[in-house]
Length: 455
Ligand SMILES: Cc1cc2nc3c(=O)[nH]c(=O)nc-3n(C[C@H](O)[C@H](O)[C@H](O)COP(=O)(O)OP(=O)(O)OC[C@H]3O[C@@H](n4cnc5c(N)ncnc54)[C@H](O)[C@@H]3O)c2cc1C
Image (cartoon, rainbow, N blue to C red):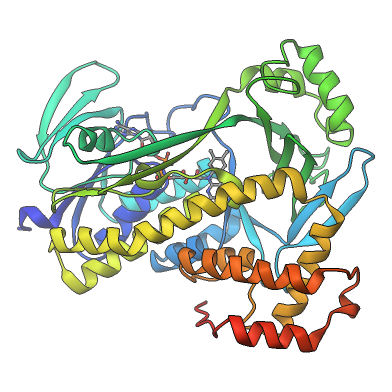
């Protein structure tokens, strides 16, 4: 019989909950999950919640640790770069990485969630659906749950609770009550809406398959990620209020006119735009920072519950999956010493999750305002040329975050140094051939130390 501290209760069977459950089960812990929603494998979920995600190196590493990556390969589509669409319909392709090994992978959130829940159950994890956590008394070790179908409230014993319950975490709300809990949440003035580009007549993709399509238009933007069934999952980002906002698109014809004007080539592929737009909810985006993440060895926040970030670096899930691997590596070293494990976890992760939160906001501005800018594209080319010559010294920030497991905080600080170097090298030139390589050598060797690159 396992001791109580070797049983872990997780709240939330979103993306991080089931992955963490698998990794903990593999180490012999008993794990159960309470999830507010019904089981999406049996009940059709509400529209507009199946947005695609880009999984990259950190997420892949975690899935490999759980033995799931090979299985995922059949439900992902590699995206080699950004395909920018101008209003006139011209296409510009900007590779993400230095070669074809550096890709990000489009996956449907629902399919990933289902694969993770199936794998968790196969490992012996019990997932209790329709069970909303309404409170947790860490001192008494008591979890309060409401059955979402019957309305019945119950209290269950739970010695160690990990809140994987997303950006509006109930476990975090409990911690707020304890005093000396630091918490900030900052919403963007922008919202998002899921839309779809259907597959062609023969199930084919109607846009280039292996790209993340972007229609950057200053204060608004449309993106599209490929699905294995030939469709594209699109996300429209718009301000909530003002001109060209969700508030300004009141009728189906407003929506169609807006697309005719701003995204005409996309509109031609979206025959159901107006009904799609009306059916799907408008989501909001928030950055959450808080501390401490744990109450002694009794409860811990992980994933979006601890550090929700805006989606513009495609890292929320990747970062949460990295949380899961770091946490279980700590249990490998310290066993069920939960106070020690939770404290070390926060110490190691907080500095990094704060860094990716800040980089995600920077990337929001970059994607919105700069990806179509000729100078920006030129700097990206120079970055790749510098990386080719100095592979473990000058690694573009995007690559440090996306294709390596370099700590996010290192990517942030090195990224700032590299930006200064780039600004100096790019000043007054317009072609990579005109780069002053002697000056580049001098700046790079002076300001950057070699990186240890882990696959
Ligand atoms: C538009 C958009 C695009 C994104 N794109 C990317 C991307 O490309 N790449 C990437 O890495 N990340 C992306 N993300 C971020 C990613 O979706 C999140 O980081 C990730 O879903 C967090 O996982 P989680 O398990 O912590 O939380 P969630 O996935 O939100 O899961 C939380 C779970 O907890 C349950 N729950 C909540 N409250 C309770 C309660 N009281 N009791 C019981 N259960 C509860 C919920 O029902 C849910 O199932 C994107 C996010 C958005 C909004």
